[in-house]
Amino acid sequence: MSEAVASFIHSSYFKNAIKFVVAISIPAFLIWAFKTAEKNAEEAVKATQQQLNDNPIQEGTATTNFELKELDDNMVTKWLLTAEKGHANKNQKDYILDKVKMKYFDQGNVKMAITAPKGQANMDTKWVKMESDSTGRVKAEGEGGKSKFEATTVVLEKKNQFLATGGVIIEWSEVAKVTGNSATGTVDKSGVKDVIVRGLPGHPTHAVITCK
Image (tube, rainbow, N blue to C red; front, side, top):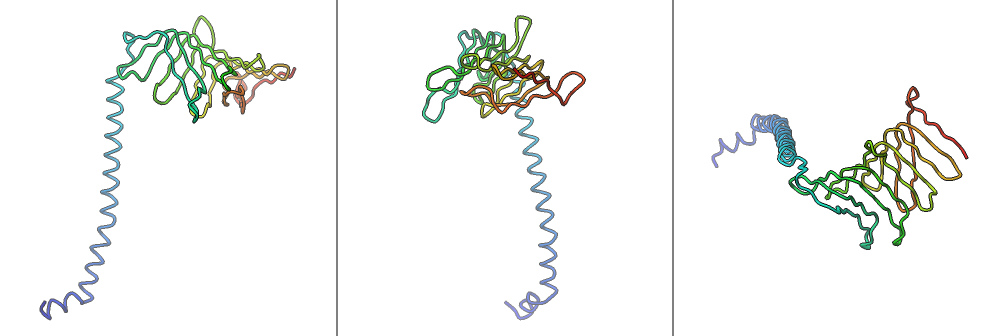
């Protein structure tokens, strides 16, 4: 390396030029990273939408005696969902169900049973939606009738959490009866618990509690 080149490299001008290049490269990299992430997100959304378009619910793909269950860590059944008929989409994961029954177990004993005229379920996520129709509502009853509830629609999500909507009625035998527009809580082997009931016509933040 010549003395002139070495002198230029060690000069303050060269060092300041390097700092400037690095400084302008950082925001440029961030912009590139953001654009790349944004593009990937858009592609993921498009792929998901395309999958939904390619796999609509097909009533022609039917099964009888539909069954879906969740097991605990010891491979013991926590709950069992059955339906007289199931209509699957093309990927055989999402089902529309007729005459649905769901049971929660504790050491083989039924602790809570839910029935509905119709419903929906996903085989992978274990997401379940139970729905009413002209023949009846979604109804649940705990062991020995100790707790009961009914609603127009009940969605069962992860960790046994539920969202009930439409004329919700929850009753604890010899304790209280609560009515409202919607309710959230947990359904498991011990029954209905951690319940929050909201809303009545004209009183969206209030529910009615009747003590026994």
